[in-house]
Length: 409
Image 1 (cartoon, rainbow, N blue to C red):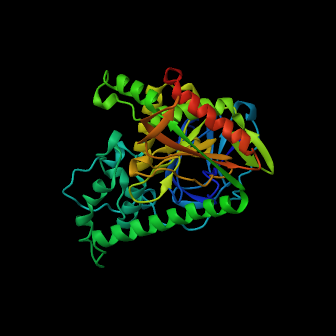
Image 2: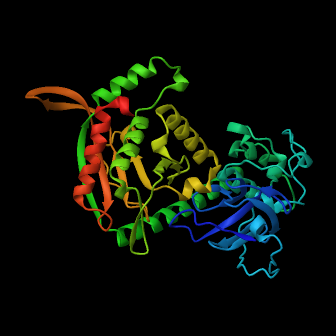
Image 3: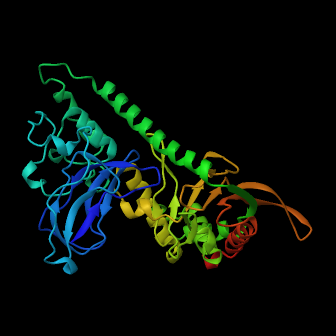
């Protein structure tokens, strides 16, 4: 028998709300199946299982907030057939704000907006953005009765708001206006997000002795290749300039593996897989860094597809637990906002963060000749407990080398 526990989806996470189960007792599951949705201060995350087996018992109902490590369910594995499972539930549960899943049984609001029958969706996964879930909870609207109009059928805030006006007419009390609810939800969400970021960054600055390095990189060759390749593609298939940067980082980490990993329990733990966390700004404010798994094994087209998919799901809901927990290094870029160089804060327990600024036309001297080239400023923030400046410099040198040989990307 295996225990399925509330995972830690980041160094700043201490508890989470079990929003939704996507399985029931008796369902067979296999490794990497998504079986639940958990809401953290940053986002609603799809939680994967890492055991093959059969769901034996669900211990925590939807809508409950529990600490990281709480046993959520028991999974009967082949190795554990016949094992005796203690029926006593030892988890700690505290009241949590109501969620869409909690309002089962309440009469849904009448509405002119077309609703889908609950019976056809009761056993299906409800895809909804975190903001939509909060808004629905505030208005006691059953998400199962809504039809999503977002990407892939995701229920977004607009779908919820479409049925809110009717809900306002329910007596006896006068519910708050939509704008008031929206402001309250956004405010609470933003505050929780800032608290989570603050906790992680305070820990980083308190525990990690950072050192910083900077270099300038001539991007002429990489941009020429990118421009040539994009001319052969449709607009939707074109590759953004940040994609070859991600690929070059992944290859350079293969040359300097000490920067790819964690510092845990006073020990450096380099990782074999290169999973690059990419910082994504959310529309409602805040930041999230899901990982592109095995980035070194993907070509530019695959990296572009992965990045587009991550950004879409980060902003609409639907990130997976592996994407939130397995990043081995972080890449962040503010070049699109005109920032020339940035000096980031390492996300613990990782040991490095790579920052990219804007690619700008700048004077460049080469072979005794002065010319103008598109120049990128790359920075490295690294944990001095794990590496020293020489290894950091070797990483930036490798990064530059790959960007001067774009056919290797």
